[in-house]
Length: 309
Image (tube, rainbow, N blue to C red; front, side, top):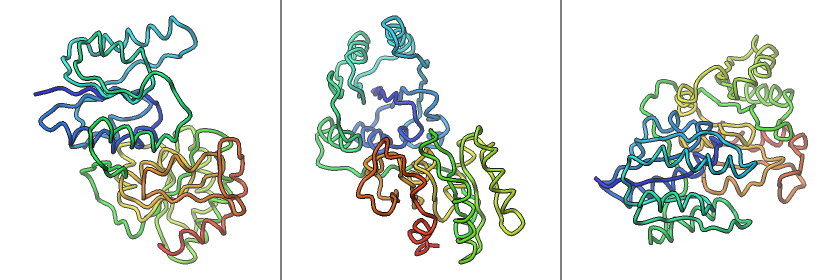
């Protein structure tokens, strides 16, 4: 059986979902082949792809900085050590990197497909799509990703995922906005609410729960593993919250995801028809540095989701 190597080492969980449909398309066009994905542990790929029907082999590279030549060389040495015992027929590199290309050459991989050596300022979603079309010589493919999951136990008509987490202070939405939004939703129909964020944000989740618990069925999932949270998300009616890893995961599980974009460009969400960006009123676009999360009103968010709750 042929062995296919895919290298995608952008570390975010959102990145893991963003590139997922491209990885699946490579698998579909390399039938009777065994796929190996090289990525970073922070991507949580082993959790996200635990039940994946296409990608069975996930290898984590060590986390190293690019601060100096020594660290860069060690990064490539780590990769060579990780892969040297496997004979690959093809490699697909989702990076602009001469180093990764040379490693694949050293590994005697016959067919190497890569982004190129000179990085340009490009739309990340379009770059993935157009490059895969070129690599595979196909006309189109479905960019909305699918996260496979075996376990489904909850009732999706009664659950809503609230994403309170963020990767930076400028991407946070005020906690009082979340509490008011939950109260507005509860006023229309009673739901079970699940708060998702990183473990370091459990304090914020508990503050929301403390304020609402008397009149609301609400629970924090901050202490759960990514794989455990997948079941809750898969069996929910919708996701509403920050532009975060959980927004991308929700979309990958087929859940309509309403993301709050006040400091990140919405083109990062263009790859999925399940992501519905919400930007502040009066803004035609949002980018890094907009610092406008507080300008997204609770009433605006409620209006966007009320048609499906």
